[in-house]
Length: 91
Image 1 (cartoon, helix red, strand yellow):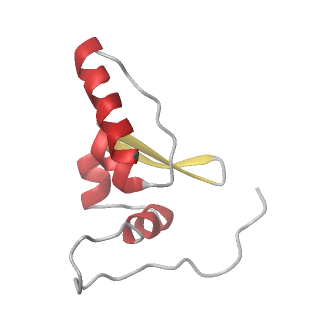
Image 2: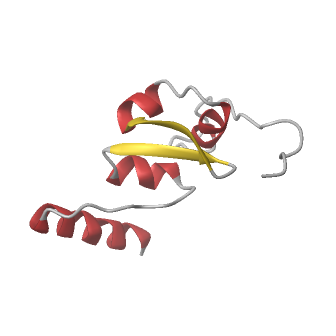
Image 3: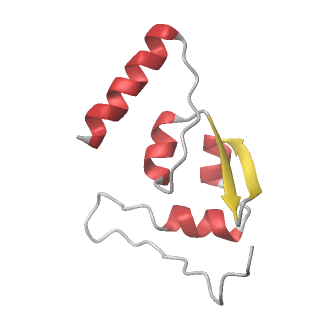
């Protein structure tokens, strides 16, 4: 169902020249539908840039942790999961 909705949004964007503001923790979806990405941490902008640049070389630890949480479709593929340590500071 999710893939169908994303494909529908993608088709509408291409047909009508739309721009979306898409807010999600699911970076695999964000990577699929976005040209640019902004990562927020505690309500502040932590990192921004073209999707390829942010995914290839994430600079902020929160961005790195989010990307490491993306499921890999290959069983047994080696992947290092980044888990942020400590407590979340009060916003």
